[in-house]
Image 1 (spheres, rainbow, N blue to C red):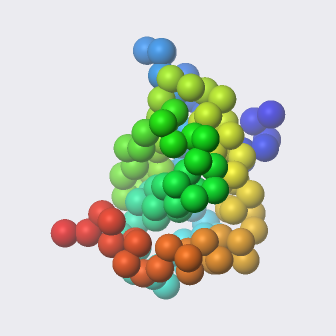
Image 2 (cartoon, rainbow, N blue to C red):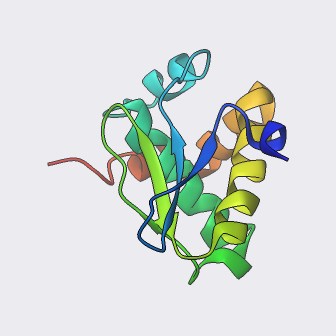
Length: 116
């Protein structure tokens, strides 16, 4: 099932929690640069938040986020929720048109979430 979420991965944090991670962002970088994103990790968190708040609302209370400039990270105790989000995000990663549509729906202001 791990192939369903590539290039994302779910890791066991050995403390009762799991993390959904992404640290290789090519070829999606250019799409996020166009909206002035502060970094690909933050940009993917913005997309993930949009997905959770608007599409996969059943995941909303089952995970949290802790991304950095160079790494996307969602985490929580619910491995299934992280896997489900990973599948959705991996589909977007592989489908530039679908990702661009979500980026457009979020809008430039949405990517200011991590601004000053």
